[in-house]
Amino acid sequence: MTIQIFNSFTRQKEPFHPIEEGKVKMYVCGPTVYNYIHIGNSRPVIVYDTVRRYFQYAGYEVKFVSNFTDVDDKIIKAANELGEETTALTERFIAAYFEDITALGCQKADAHPRVTEHMDDIIEFIKVLIDKEYAYESQGDVYYRTRKFDGYGKLSHQSVDDLKIGARIETGEKKEDPLDFALWKAAKPGEVKWESPWGEGRPGWHIECSVMAREHLGDTIDIHAGGQDLTFPHHENEIAQSEAHNDKTFANYWMHNGYINIDNEKMSKSLGNFILVHDIRQQIDPQVLRFFMLSVHYRHPINFAQDLVEAAKNGLERIRTAYANVAHRLTATAGLAEGSEQWLGEIAQVKTNFEEAMNDDFNTANAVSALFELSSIANVYLKETNTDSKVLQAILDTFTIIGDVLGIQVKVEAGLLDEEIEALLEERIAARKNRDFARSDEIRDQLLSMDIVLEDTRQGTRWKRGQ
Figure 1 (cartoon, helix red, strand yellow):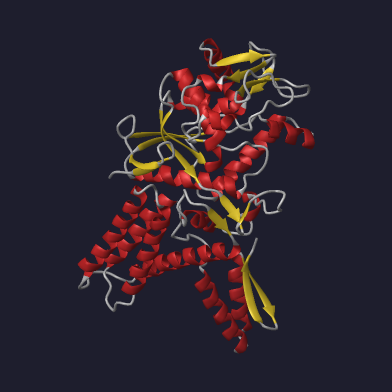
Figure 2 (tube, helix red, strand yellow; figure 1 turned 120 degrees about the horizontal axis):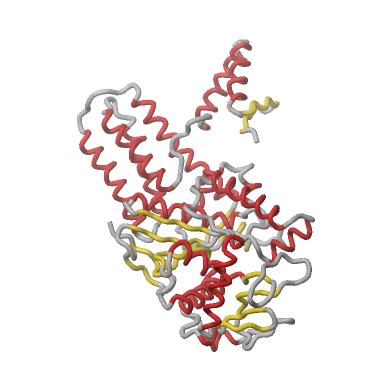
């Protein structure tokens, strides 16, 4: 199967041709670990986890690397405000990151390198850039000569002349040119620091990914990915550093996911709409959040709003209910039934539709539509008087295949579906009317053991899932 990728570098879809047959080398920019990740951070994690899963489904061996920035201005500031060591702060939020992404159904990368683990590599990388005259030392800082790199701006499709407008030298910077950017920063009093040929200091932000991508994946990688906000300057600077150092193309394909808005407004702390995954997953099933994210094509912006999340919740429930109903019917069905070949053909077509969607630049929106299509087929088939175990099993298998690639749990192992809860609630109401309080209490206890809390009000009995 041929996978088409929208390459941000060329701004068009291109067939994927790996550097090495049957293998994919993929680097995704990870978080700066000074706080819990917000839902904007969660989108690339979910998107590129799904991309990785589909490559594996398509038969590729994937080496997936995603870094942690564990030394940075924000980290130093947060550690100082909290009165703790930077290492203690970063360890805590790295652990929190893994908790969040696991809840979201994401797999760990094959490698999660940290800046602090690659300090010697970073220093050696910078030395080479200085030797090649792409970088220079200035009073303990080291800067990259942006204008020396031919083609700077080719990823973001900007010219150096356009970029110089508005560029300025900040107080304390000793640059040759306002466009030059820091590779190494001289230490300030009280900051974490490392020894280097240019004095004590720490790396600039951009250099880390160039170094870690090279150390873990080689001079040229297949895919470099991240959020749209990283295109410039971060990814642009990575290209300049890596290609000057390696004398080779840095990445053959660039992928960037779109922004997330909150109720049609840009997410920001100043607007009070900054949502942390750590908090939101206490209120929303993380699987619903993943399903919601994948319901929109990764390159398109997505609007996080209560009604849209609720629609995603209902949609996922519909899919899970269809799966559960088919699984239940299968336990009581054996043998063959007439017309089965036609049904098997329709099910096979759903799988084909799913693959076509994912081959077309990982169009998860259409892939999710395949799950709904399969649910509809399942619901119609279950109305048949005689059902075929072969058809039922094919439906379940296809649900599982698509669900596994999307990271969506279509089979609920524990707990109850909303419809099952409502049915038990109706039974409890009937028991109370019949003064069968033993059965009423039994149902309440059954639901409570599954974290379903009942509230008896004047308007009737309501239920909610426990927190």
